[in-house]
Structure formats: C-alpha cells, structure tokens
Image (cartoon, rainbow, N blue to C red):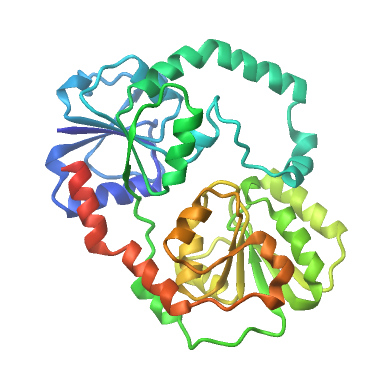
Length: 368
C-alpha cells in the first residue's frame, strides 16, 4: 500500500482520476492537506489529513506500514510531518515553489524590473533580511532532517532536480521521471490547426499566462518596445493572479507610449474560448524564470506558434534537448529576422512526450 499526502489542486484531482483509470486505487491511499470545503479535490477516495494545523489524522497510522509515501508539494505541514516520521521509502513530487522558494534557495522568481515595480508594497529590505536569518536559525535543523529522508524526487525537468540537489541541505535522493497530467486535449487542439502561414508583416503577441508577478511582464514589454515597427498588437492575459500586481502593471504600462495596440485580457473564459484567444496570436512570450504555466507553452508549440521562453528558466535546456523549436525571450529584439520553426516536428514531439501509453507506463511503474 502507498500513502499520498496531497494539496487541494486541480492537478491532484486529475492525478487521482488517472490512478483510478489504471485500476491502481487498491494500492494507493490519499490524504488531503487542506481544511474543508475543498476547492478542487472531490474524489471519494480522499481522506482529510489536517486536524488543527497539523497532519495528525490517526487514520494515517504508522508510516512504516506503507511501501511508499508520496509527498505532493513539500509545504511546511509536510516538512513537520516528514521530520517526525520514519519511512520505508519516501518520494517527493516537487511543484516548483517548494524548491525555488525554500529557505535555502538563492533563486528569485522575480527579475529586477518586477521587483522594482513591487517595491512600494514589499517589506523593508532590512526587515526581510532579519526575518530570513531568523527563519534559518529556527528551521534549518528540521528542514535538513526532512530532506535527508527523501529517497526519490520525481519530476519532469532534470535540471530542477540538479538545482534541489545543489541547494537544499541533506538531499541525497535519486531522480525519476514523472509529470502530472496537463489536461491538454491535443485531439481537440487539432481542430484549431490551419495551414502553415508566412511570417506576418506585423506580429500579434501574447505576453505571459496570468496576472502573477512571476510572469515578469515588464522585461518582455521593454524588449518588444525596441522592435515596435514589427508589432501590431500586444495582449496580456490577466484573468487570475495577484490583483495588486496587476493594478501596478496596468498603471506602469499606461505611462509608456507605444505605436502598437496593447490590451489586458481580463475575462475568465472556457478552455475553448481561451484557446481561440491564444490561437489568434503569432507569438507567445513566457518570461518566468522558473517553470510555471507550462501548459500554455505546450499548447503554443502544438499550434505552431512562435514561442519565446526565458533562457534562465530551468525548463529551457531540457525542452531544447527534446528537439523543440522555440526562441529565447531576448530574441524578441530580432523578431523580423528569426529563423522559421519546424511546426510538424514540434507537433510530433508534443504527441510523443504526452503519449498515453508512455504516461500510463510511468504511472504503473511508480504507483503500482
């Protein structure tokens, strides 16, 4: 029997559904790290794990009774749980923030332009520094103890595992491939595909995937502003995210003059309407420094768009190693001179990477 500690998230709901579809429910037990009412997870197989701010549901029992324990997102509750328990085999499924925003990570998800935009709303630097030092002093032992118990980290980007190995104290884990269902219906996306078109005289560009600060919109807009003669329209989808950041971003954009049309897409729409919106652009620009919103990247690649990704993003070298044709965000400066992409090759790589038989084999290997 395997134990899963899961957050309340749409990815987890789809994960449990796949476990059920593969007839693996009998060997996997799920406890959710959340207080009712849940927002995303409504699977009947899920039990509450959290009681009064701790993972102490007696139904969990002795963790040594389980063949494998899977921690989906290593939050503070999970750190406390892992540090105080013993395991036969402990497997961590990181979600990005539990690596990059760990106490021990020097990584920042915000570039200098986004930090400058947010500075008026942030804590004083000195206070932040003192608070971080206090966190380190009080938590380093517990975190090291928890990390040292992890046997395997399963994720889809090898460079992300290397980063964890380098920066998180106590990690001595091995690495295996795993990816959550991205819920990308490629068969449905095929209906949006048209015949390949020549590069337009002026480009329509989508920047970012949400109103979250980690999109680092300003840097991308600054680059686009240097090639305005090649640009017809820029649109920023901000239907969800940090509304304080969105307001600051809108005010900042309003101060800047541009020769092209710039819009903010604020309405939260159905999947089909969002794909229609995304498909109306020639270029998709994603400037997060860490892997985030990657479903948008894969959709853009499959639809034959010119996709731009931050070169600092740890997903960048891995995606290039798959053979995908896409550009770095800095290449926006040469928008009109970029080499063409191999649309058919990109499409095939997408279909091979997310092949149902491949994903099913991974699940059977890990969760049987």
